[in-house]
Image 1 (cartoon, rainbow, N blue to C red):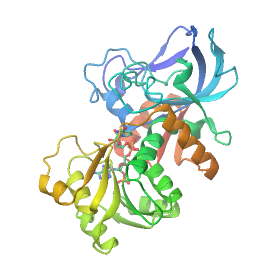
Image 2 (image 1 turned 180 degrees about the vertical axis):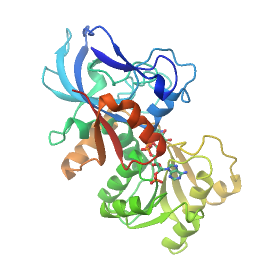
Image 3 (image 1 turned 45 degrees about the horizontal axis):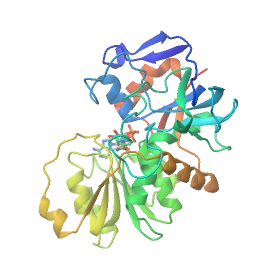
Image 4 (image 1 turned 60 degrees about the horizontal axis):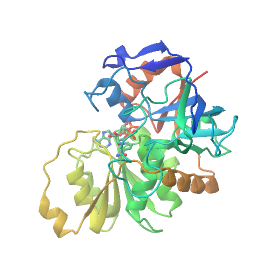
Amino acid sequence: MRVWQISSFGIDSLEFAERPMPVPGPGEVLVAVRAVSLNFRDLMMVKGLYNPKMKLPRIPCSDGAGEVAAVGPGVTLWKPGDRVAGIFMQNWIDGPLTAARAKGALGGDIDGMLSEHVVLRELGLVAIPEYMSFQEAATLPCAAVTAWNALAAGEVKPGATVLIQGTGGVSMFALQFARLNGARVIGVSSSNEKLERAAALGLDAGLNYREHPDWEEWALEQTGGEGVDLVVEVGGSGTLPRSLKAIRYGGTVAQIGVLAGAAEPLAIPLILHKMARIHGIYVGSRRNFLEMNRAITLAQLRPIGEAFHWAQTREVLQKMEEGSHFGKLVLTIE
Ligand SMILES: NC(=O)c1ccc[n+]([C@@H]2O[C@H](COP(=O)([O-])OP(=O)(O)OC[C@H]3O[C@@H](n4cnc5c(N)ncnc54)[C@H](OP(=O)(O)O)[C@@H]3O)[C@@H](O)[C@H]2O)c1
């Protein structure tokens, strides 16, 4: 079978390789992968920025959807032909995250989904919504589950205000989920054109953060000086202090990303005076994925993104690096 693998770090070093077809053992499932979606993490993984000590070669990408091709002895959950997606952390099935459950992330700790076939344990899969294509379903395991849990962390109720940053994969799911919860959504982006596209998806107000770097002032104005209930924080360095200013007293920052950097000296008084909650999010469990799928099926939600043939993986990673995309970038395997 054909795979993309990281043999040495760098987008140009990503190589198309041939590997033996895996055989599912007891409790395992062979999946024919039809589509994979890219996350910013995959780009960092390929460049060696996520884990420079990662054992190579490694097949990248956490997110993929496909069809069950065969099952090993004792498998009861799946049969050939079932449409499935892998879960991000193969050991986080239910309950809170623990050190043991945090191990086994696809495309990092273990080989990922950018492969014609994968073998995963039966609980490492969920059924994908029937109405979704493989390309759509491949966007769900990381970005969507993360956005889902960010909204849960903010305990977002109808009438709340949620602020999103940028128009990437996590942020566009956060916009859709916040709207499902009846929240008002405001957002910042580097591009006026992207803000218009987000407005068509339900963004209530937008601001270009290149033209207006002090967007926290705007967020306060947008909420009559009170501050927003939740910031879905994907920037990290430089954006976290602004997010803390943008939230209301007792508001939540769901800390998800490090797009602008991973280190930040924090104004501690701001956290305590505001009784702010900074809630770290690390994707979510299989149960979170199942609950999210129930909600998105009920709403017939459609993920936002663009698909390419997987032969173009390197070019698509470059596109992600430039930040020219909107929503998810998807690779179709055929
Ligand atoms: N903790 C977790 O479990 C988890 C899960 C998923 C992702 N993440 C992290 O979350 C971040 C986003 O991931 P993603 O896959 O959604 O990325 P993505 O699709 O590549 O999104 C990137 C977009 O974010 C916006 N952006 C970049 N720098 C920004 C800044 N300084 N301020 C505001 N917006 C900025 C840009 O949108 P515009 O062009 O519109 O400005 C850019 O196109 C990454 O750091 C990723 O590693 C963490």
